[in-house]
Length: 387
Image 1 (cartoon, one colour):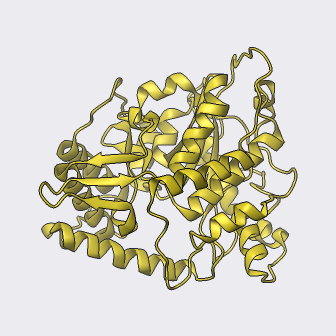
Image 2 (cartoon, helix red, strand yellow; image 1 turned 90 degrees about the vertical axis):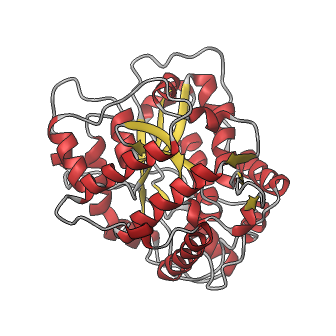
């Protein structure tokens, strides 16, 4: 979504807050008409998809009729997702819900790739101050204004965290075997990020139906993961929209510019390597990839090491990884590069380590040198392992 020049995002916390408010005012509107019940409503999990090789992955424009009982209609849900996709394209979160060892935690998200303008380093202690991102602000506003008044909470999760937090089927069911099955297309329109690219750059775009046809099998495989665990995902509805004010706001983040995903990945890798070098972490500090173990097993080993180095601060409940075939396949598969937008009962937050950080009203997060070094080591090892 960014050009080869990769302009730095706005670094002022006040500017990011103002930009997030524009997105919130445009895309978050779901008045609560009296008390409502969410009896028997299980989570909704919406996967990332990619419609075009020139675009980053966006969350599918999906909804569930079951949430309509709470005023979360198709129109409301699609609007929320459109705003989230714009925020993600412009300024991804600094933390997401992932798995660290055997628990679900609110973990750093690609800190090595953060723009230098969003990081302030204390020269005396080495501690960092990280500006909360546009996505962090937007999701916090969505929870405060839309989801929590309904007894729900929305989080961005990795695949493994989504599997832990979503409801398991009543009968034992080898869910992971269902990858590749299903008959539901995940979207009928291009994500709103694609709309912004077309409107601002005035370039001709391929018809959205083409993207739908090409990527339908990918969507089916991802939807197979939630079969029996979460609400069925429905699609359709009105196309995405964006006001002139929104487009002007997004242009400051380079969202409207050209540039391929490969170019962006190369830029982010260079940025990460600079960050590793600055932190004194080079080539994983001698980390050797043990290819005799499955990729998922290696990921879990690194996660457990990361958790020992960094340590949790706010875990209430310890969660084990899934048992049996689900856990075995997860350990060998490790598809955590895919993110999910998960809407679940608010009490599920009690099962996530350090999620209290997500509720902080501060616009910045302070990170100690120890935590920063532990994360740099973890991310450098992940990069060596091809993640």
